[in-house]
Image (cartoon, rainbow, N blue to C red):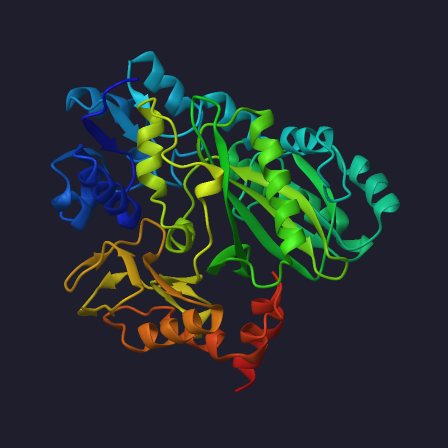
Length: 454
């Protein structure tokens, strides 16, 4: 057990505010590490103390391990919370924290390193008899890919071994595109992750993206908090999530949750993590995809249906406390949706829309939650992700959660910047979505063409 009395937040935006709220409820002081452009941000104002860590560009501020650790030590912090993105899945941060006696509010460095290597994680899943998508090992040269694809057949999906978020991912439908897309995928992966390694998987056209929320402590207790459906994506970026998954049978839900538990137990995982699967809707078969060793953007939908505060649990675990609940305590209560409200222009290829928010009037009411750092007069900077906030609703069933989300979106007023509110409204009114007839390519292959035709 160790005492955590002050946490440096190595992130920005809505997740920084989310961590501040959790710390306050635990009577822990907070230090906001901010770039120069974020000095007047809401999370900087809400923290107990603020320290500037560098210029606006993330490479010179939020991605500087040494600067962040020095800021924590200089402000008397006991721990660092990385949030998501930036350094959240870089093992150098927890390693440097350990060298300087700081608690890292997240998993051990070895877990980040192991599970961040998708090929290593894939082999681990296979050793536990967890289904994986038919695919290859590491492919370093184009000649190796050519022979692999001859055996697998088309379409095939190229993926970065060390990355995520769609970087380095290419779908190949025909042989004449193979060489060009291989080099593009490798170059993109090297640019994004400093690692150009590529591997190939069979592409599943009618797939859902289903992820299991995990939580483990240092006493060896590991539980799951059921699943989230994250199938609504554009260019591999999630746009709307819900929990639980509307198409899983009780038997399949049990099977996929047990597979996630087996994997997390095998590596003796600590803190919050998410094990992701692809569900082939034609075969009713799930396959291991990857593990994210951090709190997820979409964690609120799990909190809304279980009543468990995942960020507070992260902090307690980092202090050496056991989980405050057991597997038997985790129950699903209702249904929840999350819409990611971005400063983007859906009518203009979703181009980012930075600028000053002239009017910000969020919805409110029972079972409506908004995680956001924005307010009237806030200037959305062009240097970071375009997320303005996450609008979450809960209902006793899926239909009620959808209805409540529609009401919340209709009452959400944002002017001065373009947003994705209207696009989410189009999703929710679509009969395919309401009937659960979607997959990971539905937005790009079905909804966007429908919108463009009107």
